[in-house]
Length: 364
Ligand SMILES: NC(=O)c1ccc[n+]([C@@H]2O[C@H](COP(=O)([O-])OP(=O)(O)OC[C@H]3O[C@@H](n4cnc5c(N)ncnc54)[C@H](O)[C@@H]3O)[C@@H](O)[C@H]2O)c1
Image 1 (tube, rainbow, N blue to C red):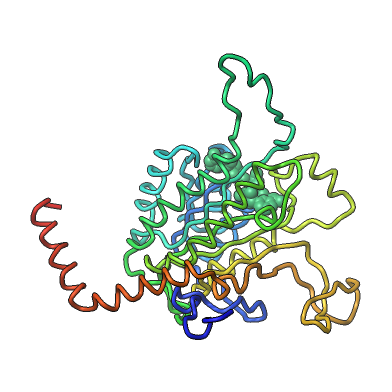
Image 2 (cartoon, rainbow, N blue to C red):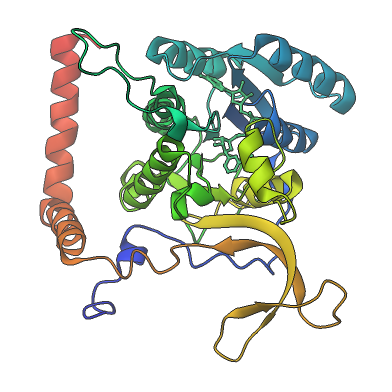
């Protein structure tokens, strides 16, 4: 695209290069990090909690499922000999519940701050069957859009809180693709959980599809702006995976085809979580298949017992997004950066004086 080299958007917003899956990372880099996982009581969330706590992370299981979440925490504390695993009740659709959960999670942090937030809670149902009925009645009840409240509004609430709390993490510095994850003791990371339904249409579940497309839009926009808060953001988009969220009609339609595996989702999430130099990247998680590169630089599936190729479940989506960005964003970013440059030290001094005089006036 014209202008790409003269103004590399990806560098300006501190995006890291495409994820190199052949590069090793160490889950031990998570030791001592304090992480919130919404919907942590079952499925992917429980998988993340178990894996990360087994590498010495301190984890908050935030869920509406009090029995399941508390039981999981007790089991894992014993099994992993890690006392820093806690259940905090949270209904992600309730703003005050999220605010309380973040405050509680901060209090429970061994170092007083939050390193990573995973807005993972979700639900689904076959909502195409929810046809509009009797809307010509005098006062028809509003439609039930609960999925949008859990899968999109709940995530927006969590992300809103995360943007407030992550930069306050004591000892954390702005996320940086050039940093060394082995020595980054603190982090500021949001890991969004999208879906294949973020990337492709999903029949019978338009509310789920709309919500998950919303998560993709949120990710694509935030990865261009969160650098201003020093926060890194990444996205995982799993295909259908065997957990409680997959409804029976979907299971019937998937019969005979492959499904994704929880361990591959956990593997993708752990790479993002541990490797703090990965900023603004997304991975789709499909069924594990054997593939080899074809002559056009793409991939073709080969039989599972073939000596050629490699087994793979993780694929990067929207790799060149930012460098293909359109004029509005490109110019807007140029403008923001010019303002920072023009204001320079004089602007900084003015802001500092302004902050002190605010403190004196307000007593805060
Ligand atoms: N399993 C799949 O096929 C699949 C595929 C792509 C994306 N996802 C996404 O992965 C995430 C996790 O789903 P899962 O597959 O582990 O399903 P799951 O049903 O096992 O887990 C969802 C968790 O969210 C919790 N939850 C639901 N409503 C909540 C609320 N209002 N407040 C707090 N917690 C709430 C549930 O109690 C549960 O513990 C979801 O965002 C889902 O959309 C799942």
